[in-house]
Length: 64
Image (spheres, one colour):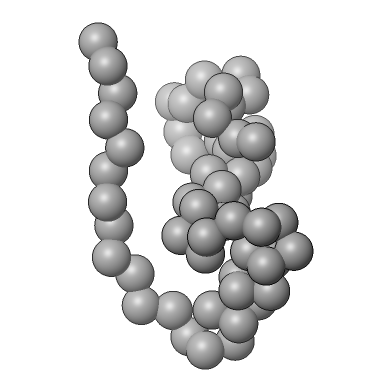
C-alpha cells in the first residue's frame, strides 16, 4: 500500500508565517515543507505525551 501525501490549506497568523519563513530560509526549504515537518514533529510530541490516545509511540519515519 503506497501512502500518498495529502494537501491541506491553512491560514496562519502573520507572526507564525514569519517564523516559518525564517526557518525555511535557514533550512533552504520551501515554507510548506517546513510547515509539514513542524506539524509532524508536534504530532509526534503529542503521541509521546499520550495526548493522542491509541497511537503507536514509535518514532515517525518521515521527519528529516
